[in-house]
Image 1 (cartoon, one colour):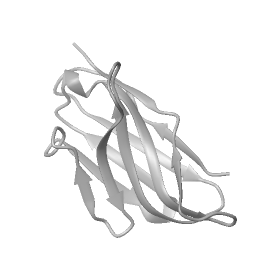
Image 2 (cartoon, rainbow, N blue to C red; image 1 turned 45 degrees about the horizontal axis):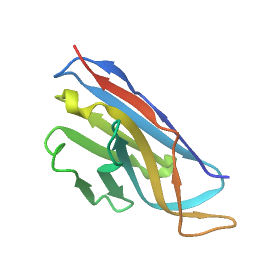
Image 3 (cartoon, rainbow, N blue to C red; image 1 turned 180 degrees about the horizontal axis):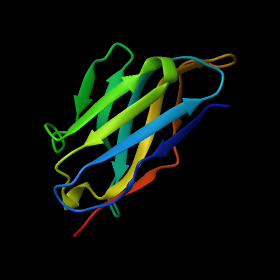
Length: 121
């Protein structure tokens, strides 16, 4: 069925940058929106950034001006460029796809396995 695979996580020093990628695969006709969420130890999963098929975006207040989400609709791929990383950005980052239309389902949501981002000196 539909699978989301993230890549690009790793260890980076404060002030550094990382670029996360997420590719959705399967018999997909369309995806309405894709986004990135993160979960730090002991905390709830929270929205980081989200982008619709039409290009509308929203960001968590904590990442505005530092992170940029983009999407390649034809490839069902979403990216998250993370600049000026802070220690508080350390978390597992999860890719999300909403309103996924396939040959057998519609308006479904899917999650990736997650990729670890650690910001530390």
